[in-house]
Image (cartoon, rainbow over all chains, first blue to last red; front, side, top):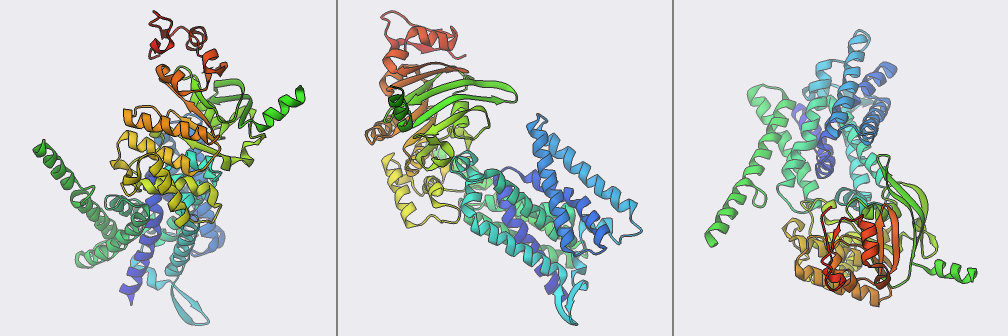
Length: 292
Length: 263
C-alpha cells in the first residue's frame, strides 16, 4: 500500500505541475515558476506558526498570497527599469531567505524541518492520513493534491481559449477584450497552489523540475498545444514511476530520482524526437545538402 | 453646420481626440487628433520612432494613454471592440508556438465567443474561408513555424478577416514580405474597401503609398498632416515629417521616385 500511495502522490504532483508547466514554458516564464516555488516559503512558515499544523487551508492561502506577491514585485521592478532576470533573482532569493530566517528563529516551536521543505519526504506521505470518525481516508497529501488537480483542470478547461491566446498573442487577447492581467495572475495563483500542495512531497526545489522539465520534453514531441499539455503530464507521471523504481534499486532519495528521471526523458526527447530532435534535424540537413 | 459636423463624426469609423502616450516617461505620441471616413484605406507614414505603432496600441488600449479619447463609430472603443480588427507586427508573437495555421486564424473568432464559448464547426468554417481568401487554404494544417515569413503574414491577415470587423488596424503588414504576399495583401485591402470597411495601415515603403492608399496620415510624435493622398503626400510635408532625413531623386518631381533613407 505504501508504494501505491507514493506513486499516486507523485503522479498527482506531476499532473498538477505538468499542466501548468506547459503554459510557463510557452510564455517563456520558466524562471517565474522557480521564483514562485521559492517565494512561498515565508507564507508556509507564517501559516504554520499561526495554525500550528501543516495541512491547513490557511497554509495554502498564505502561500498563494506570497506567490502572487512575488509575481507582483517582479513585475513592478521590471516595469520600473530593472533587468528582468535581476528582478526575479532579487525577489525570490529575498523571500526565500525570509522563510529560512523564520524557520531558524522559531525552529523550537515548529516541527518544520528545513530538509523536508527543500527536498520533500514523499516516502512518508502515508504516515500522515486523514481520519474521519476513525475511518482511514488515505494520506492528507493525496487529498490536497487531488483537490489542487481538480481546480487546475477546471480553471484551465473552462478558460482554455483565454489561456491559449494570452500565451500566443497577448496583444490580440487584449484587443479582443480578454482581461490579460487577470488571466496572468490566475495562472500564477495556480502555480503557487500547485507548488504549496507539492512541496511536502517533493520539496520546494524539486517541484521546479517537475514544473519545467516534463513541459520542455513535451514541447519537443508535438506541434499542438492540447497534446503538449497531456504529454507534459504523462511525462511527469512516467518520471514518477521510473524515479521511484530507481530509488528503490539504488536506495536513494525518491524525489531526487524522480527529477533525474525527468531529466533523462528530456535528453531522450532532445536527441530522438522525430520532429524537433537533434538527430532528426541533422538527418534532414544532410538530406537537404544531398539533394542540392 | 456644427450639427452636420457632429453627425459626420458620429458616423466616422474612427475619431481620435488629443491622444498622447509615453514609454518609460518619454513621450512618443503627443496630442494626436484626427477622424477617418468610412471605406477608406489610410496609410500611416513617418520615420522610425515616430510613434506609428504606439498610436495603434494606444488607440486599442494595449498600452496606457496619457490622455485622449478614441471613438469607434461614435462610441468609446471599449463598447465597440467587436467592430475592430487588429493585425500586430509579425515579430510580436512566437512562431514556434505549438499550433497550426487554421488554429491561429480561429483565434480571430475568440472575441465573438464570450467568456465560456468554444470554437466549433462555425468558427472552423469561417477560419477556412478566411485562409482561402489570402490564398493559404492548402496550408491550414501546417505547423506555423514551417511557414515562410510572407505566409505567416497572410495567416495574420486571415485571422483579422475572421474577426469580421468594420475597422482594421494593421501594423506594417508589408514589412519583409515576398512579392506574392504583397500582391495578396493589396488585393485583400481593395476587397475590404469594396465591402465598405475601413483600414488603417502603418506603412514604410514610400514608393507605393500613392498606389495603395486613399488618405495619408503623416506622423512624427505629433500629427504632421492628414488628408487625401494627393494633397498630403507632397515633398514639402514629407520633408517636414522626416525632418530632412529624406533623400529625393527629384528629377521629374514624381513622387514615386522618392526614397526614404534609413534613419
